[in-house]
Image (cartoon, rainbow, N blue to C red; front, side, top):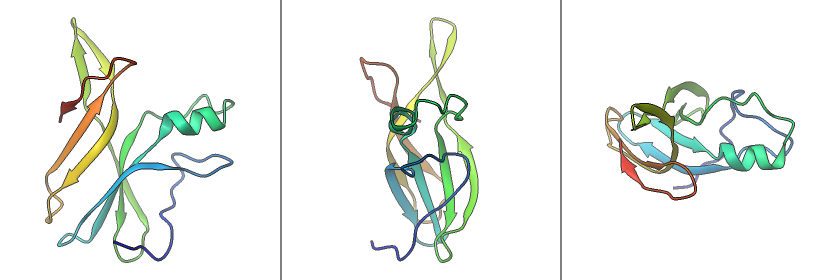
Length: 113
């Protein structure tokens, strides 16, 4: 799939732009879903200490305009909720179901959300 333009939003911004770990599209819904690489963005811009946690960003397929952000599920570990990092994303054509492989920490254990 080739996109003619760029997907822009204001949640995650930095001097080198935003790199996305994964981008998928829902053909019938005409939506694009993208996972920004928040850790890489923080590495490029250490002064960005108030970035939000990684979220699933949704864009219009035809105009590439930002629509919304969806929070990622948390890990439940020993009665604590821990934030995860998404890596692989699969969306159905209608855009109403997604599968996200995500993990946390240096010893990654991928889970399906």
